[in-house]
Image (cartoon, rainbow, N blue to C red):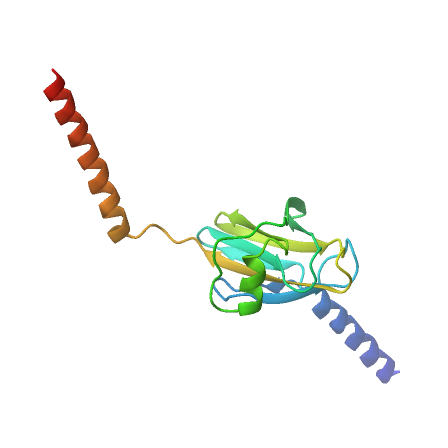
Length: 170
């Protein structure tokens, strides 16, 4: 009898562990995940995300071309990946970066405000199943002051030049 109770308790523990949310690490680089069946959540879903500032959730297929992934945030479809090439990679995973910058693989990004989120990824499996992909969560970087100063100076210079031309014309 004790063995049966122990076995039942173990089964419940395993079920609870497998259904818990995965944490997505802010600025932790690309993390891999897979879907086993079309239209079902990925093995790592849902991702539990808690942000104190805005951040980008990014995803890219990087295994077999043709897959499209649907991203649900708090149970609502937020976006689906598209076959868009982004300008540059991030330098931490050559495979994921190559897919991110290629229009042959579907990718996408979504700006999240500060707050708590549950993110679920599902895929269509059009490229074949299981379907693998990469996700990442990146801080939004503000324009640094050294980069903002030349912009301000250029704007002020343009205003001064326009005023000078106006005074000469009068």
